[in-house]
Length: 134
Picture 1 (tube, rainbow, N blue to C red):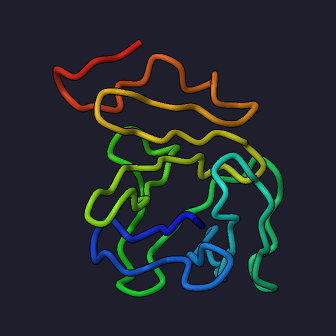
Picture 2: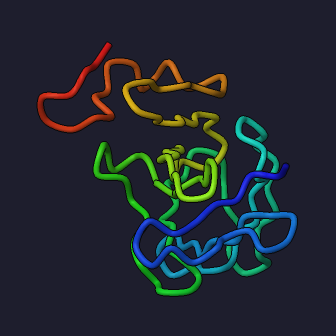
């Protein structure tokens, strides 16, 4: 079964087809970004007007409600929801630096890390104040 991702603000379905669709901006450059729904797969398609360079920070928004997807954990991460089961959602945080491979799936009291750059975020507390951290 394919992963289904949702906006954490309006719960719009972000991958009604084969890719996760997000609005993205870097300064005045704006466009759509299509991401793989496979956690740990960093292939992407970037809209023609955006033209990103490795290392640039990208601002992601929901394509439906326009909400900022910046994570509350750290501004270097963006956050979406992943549906697990009929009514259960888990948080997925991913690097918003173009070319940086770091994704975190937060379920209950566990964080699964993916990507060659995930270690750059070690020590983060994905559970909020008083939560567990490594």
